[in-house]
Length: 306
Image (cartoon, rainbow, N blue to C red; front, side, top):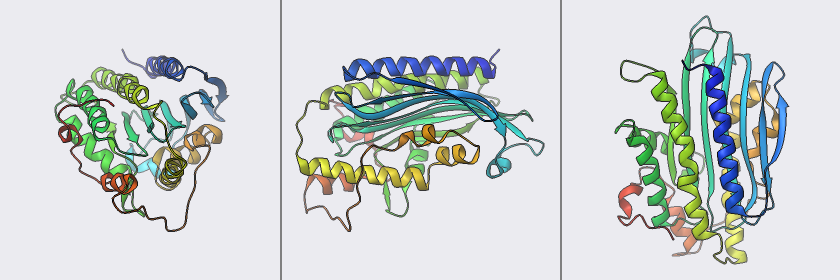
């Protein structure tokens, strides 16, 4: 029988696996562990890595917390629900090099004292410069893990990611998307065990989808101009996380730990006034890809890396 305790234990194992994989790829920095307690009940392990060979700043958070149900979630649950339990793993990695993309992943489980429960999560990639081959490879990884469980998952969750990771005030997507899903509940065709297995497999797809891209790009030289473009794109990342991200809002409205919530922000970012990329530049080309409904899987049939 799956319980909230067994879910939390498996999520913590996934956190450790991902930290070990990222440390091996970076080759220098290691994750520091910061254990903390929630002000109501539970707590978490925030694991932060900084100033490595590849990673400038990154975090792999695990939490399992309880508290009063926030007002903005009451329409999602039973009328009698007053308290929640939530556990999950949340990751954001900000590399030094503009050739290596930012990546985000989250897997989570939520239940209330009235019997509501569901899973959510997703993975998305935010390149400074879009490499079509690598974007295609990344989305193929997302499709592969989805197709193991339901052929409808990838197109549905890919479209959900396009809509969710959209910076409305900029009219552009945060990156090339990936998959995003929420409120996955058992029904006639899906058991809780199957949904849990799917969410765990999404979590374990993180290293498979990301490390080959990191390995291919981490030694590519870059110019000061390319670094400046990276800082501008990080600024867009900050805008999304502080204005639209539901996880940030949930953490802030449930007395979450501020350092862990804002771990997703980069160490350095910039905002230049009215910056417009040069015509036919790599920067302009990247902006042309930051839109919804791009069919990345079929854009490059070779699915090559590099």
